[in-house]
Image 1 (spheres, protein in one colour):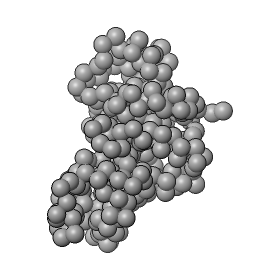
Image 2 (spheres, helix red, strand yellow; image 1 turned 30 degrees about the horizontal axis):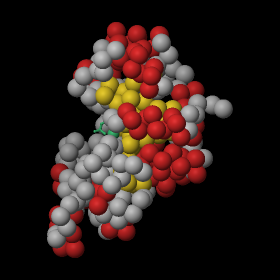
Image 3 (cartoon, protein in one colour; image 1 turned 60 degrees about the vertical axis):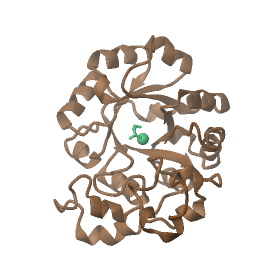
Length: 282
Ligand code: G3P
Ligand code: MG
């Protein structure tokens, strides 16, 4: 059976961070469609569990930044706007697109890179179900890195990994999915439930002690450190041991080239359209 990284035999593949989030609202169908259209090689998405057990795409621990929840009277009396506290039918009521036009987080509204013709599509964006996204990935034969958000301290903590693994199986996307997380216990759980699935350890701020032994013990196929704490020596060292290194989040083209020259398999970027244009994709 083919494994996830068999589809990435070379270096420098372009991974669209939360979709093409510089030109569409992050973690929405529009951002994922834009990523595929612009020539990205794979998607990165963030996954959490709703109060009624649905896996959804969402990054933050609260809805304020990327939805209109603060303007909706029906949610004003809620004590928490945590994704794990709302049911999916409640999540469906949220507008997950208009904030992007107002905040213009990457300046692409002001610059015109997002055309006014697209504004109505932006405003229609909702929080997607992982099931629908995986079905699209299967249909387009398009790889995806599912980042399971750390749900420690929430009701979702004990259930989320099993549900992700089951859904990958049910949608027949095992070879298209790489599962990553900052919660490395989740990665152990994934391997226990389905040893075939590829996993990747996400790390921010500093590397774990005895990194090589640590990663071998986790049984991960890849290491996903913050690009700020990574250099070419580390990438080469891990690669020699058969562990892929993929960096996040790299928005500077020269920096991307540095990592590609060092042997990084993929580069997670908010600007996939630029990296693809520069010809970094093999
Ligand atoms: O998977 C790479 C990256 O997405 C991790 O950080 O906060 O953007 O989900 P974050
Ligand atoms: Mg992420």
